[in-house]
Amino acid sequence: MSEDFYSVLGVDRDASEEEIQQAFREKATEYHPDVSDDPNAEEKFKKAKKAKEVLTDDEKRQMYDQMGHERFQEAEKHGATEGGAGGMGGMGGGPFGGAGGGGGMNDIFEQFFGGGGSRSGPQQGADLRTRLTIDLEDAFEGVTKQLTVNRPERCPDCDGAGHPPDADARTCSACNGQGQQRTVRQTPLGRVQQTQTCPQCDGEGTIYSETCSTCRGEGHVQEESTLEVEIPAGIRSGQTLRMDREGAPGENGGPKGDLLVEIKVEDHEEFDRDGDDLQYHHPISFPQAVFGDTVEIPTLDGTVEMDIPAGTQSGETFRLRNKGMPRLQRRGQGDLYVQVQVVTPDNLNEEQREALEAFAEAGGEEIDVEQGFFEKLKNSF
Ligand SMILES: [Zn+2]
Ligand SMILES: [Zn+2]
Image 1 (cartoon, helix red, strand yellow):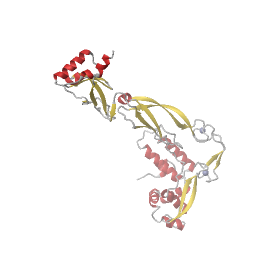
Image 2 (cartoon, protein in one colour; image 1 turned 60 degrees about the vertical axis):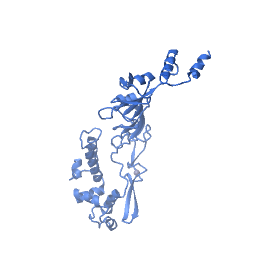
Image 3 (cartoon, protein in one colour; image 1 turned 180 degrees about the vertical axis):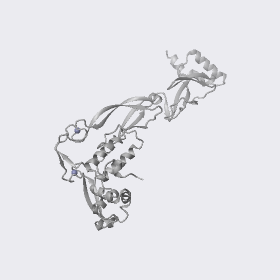
Image 4 (tube, helix red, strand yellow; image 1 turned 135 degrees about the horizontal axis):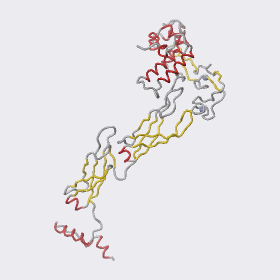
């Protein structure tokens, strides 16, 4: 059961349009999502807006007063499908009596045929997008970064109005101050009136003698702002952080939009990332591969020791549990996969050479070592 529009705004039934506008502004401020702690702020705001829209429209208000809250709501819901066309053609002979005449019906029709909404209500500002690059260490730790954005802000000189406060105002002649222009077109259901925002006054209904020179009438100016972005540990490249109410300013007291920050995590010199896991390549010597060893492996969180078992093959991969990236907004960490590579020595000293030759001989291998590159090089000195 929804509340009567007058009580939503807290005004008397004979309140003037001025009083209704004022009451709405107060509600809008009270339930502004920026400032309100009320968990139902958004819904209350919408209710107040709806109430204002109906009660500041003479035709709609008249209908509303005659029909009462419930019937009016019903009429809005079904107006387009039930006898709407007849009402349109019949001029006052429609199911809702002559209350609003054809005009009242038309207003209901507009809601179903995509007529442009009035721009007079508060509107949330646009979302803005930007990018921020961090390195893998930052993504591992989580970090607070400074972010400089060039974004529209409410013009400080006119406070967003687009004109100096002392500018002369006159009613827009293109729309007679309605802020909207109506066009009528024929449809199978009858004549349908469409409403568009007046291009002359941009929906304000008023033309001002001067425009604000700072913002050239736009109501906002581009300004550089530095923000602090909290980047959570475990974030991945391409993920987007939403900063509430850091976007473009709203219109007519509406809230700001959001700022969407797309994060790019730079590639790391040592670690390859695969989701929450990391990969690392570690060189080992031939004897280490043969006999096994304990080696030190770097991680993003200091070095750890890793056992290489005897008889390890080049290219084998070992897993270090929980040494990968933190899981975003969850407990735990991914793993670090260490792929070992046996490095073939290319600068043996004499002793090593002899030992290796002996090794080959002991295994029954016949290698023509005299023709080796090393040998030839040595002989040329
Ligand atoms: Zn206009
Ligand atoms: Zn300005």
